[in-house]
Image (tube, rainbow, N blue to C red; front, side):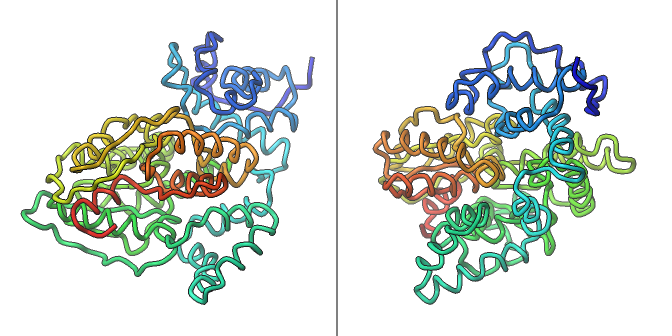
Length: 430
């Protein structure tokens, strides 16, 4: 028998292993299994690895970590599971421990550059802005193409990051801290722009403010918005995720806004789970639950409260891609489609495998570029097959990953957020 491993989980978590009946219904829902056909790259296979590691029947080896690390945590297996296995809870409990055994104490990712950036750059908007400043300046001087080609020659993840940044999305002035409601006051919201989103998705955040205000809501922005902790969670750093969660609760718990709104599905999923992340932290559990109850994805919120009919007709054919963290983690599927259906003239055509991950998955396209590239290629192929002029989604990470994949396929296409299309239909530009 293999040496006992220091992989420990609570009794409640361990009981979740037994919910898996090994039926295999998760296999066709798993993006990595679709690509490799390898049982070890399926939820069922990963559950087997995790349970036997916890039982001490196998060592936490580099091979075990690689198969666990290939998981996107897209959670597509969960709605497909007839037994209700809470797969993401198991992975989030075990994978960080395996990472520390394999990579060393305090480590969570194989790539040291990426791990450093996840901990020291990505959660801080000012540092993110500084990191993209050279590309922004180069583009202003007409040298963007040269700088991007040089950047892509750099070691991953730096080259991958350069390839992800789309033209135009690093531009734009800062938004006002307060925008009043128009045409009758219906409530107040705080728009959470995201640590990276506040820098690379200013056009989206501006569209969110305009659409919310147009529909009767005062919109507030935080002067200093803490990271939600999703980046740390993706990087196998649960302690870091909890620390960021505490900062979010401190920033939001005393606010009197009716709702907290996020246009980024991955951030929204993490924010809605604040109560779970901080359930064992004294002084935070109850406050975290109250904050989480006021969290909404922006498409979910607009569909819930009802929007004013857009005035402008958009004669265009688009297709819609489901964000994993909106569909599988937040269980929001109908709302984005309902909003698009309200836009006069807009035709939405079905996308094959709309619910299969595009390969973005937080930092996955940086930590697992080969697998993410294959998923992006698969997604781009299905989008091109629709004949649509534009792809619409509800997550910034998906936007950048899909745009990159379409460029790589030689079929560049505009990819926009649902709210950006809504803003256009309200006459707020394109």
